[in-house]
Amino acid sequence: MSDTDRDIDHTLAYPEPPASPLWHRDGPRTRPLTLEQQRRNRALLLLAQKRPRQTTTAKAA
Image (tube, rainbow, N blue to C red; front, side, top):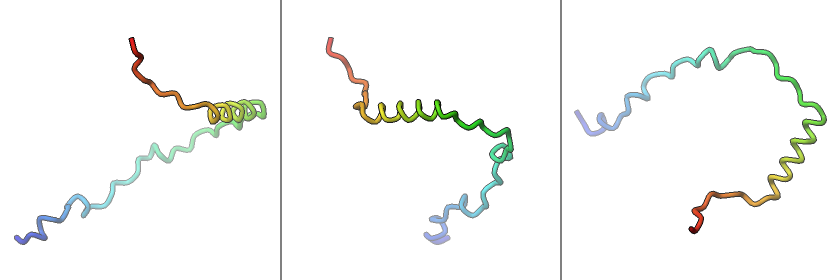
């Protein structure tokens, strides 16, 4: 057995298993957002982009 035989990853020699049928489920369509919901989401997004990111830091006792 040569050195090159040991370098082969045999797990890559097999094909991938088929995708789960749950990934291809055709369920009910989601309802589109109302104009008011879209406006609220835009306002919250703009607010979140303006605020500095909050990080959890240890407080001095």
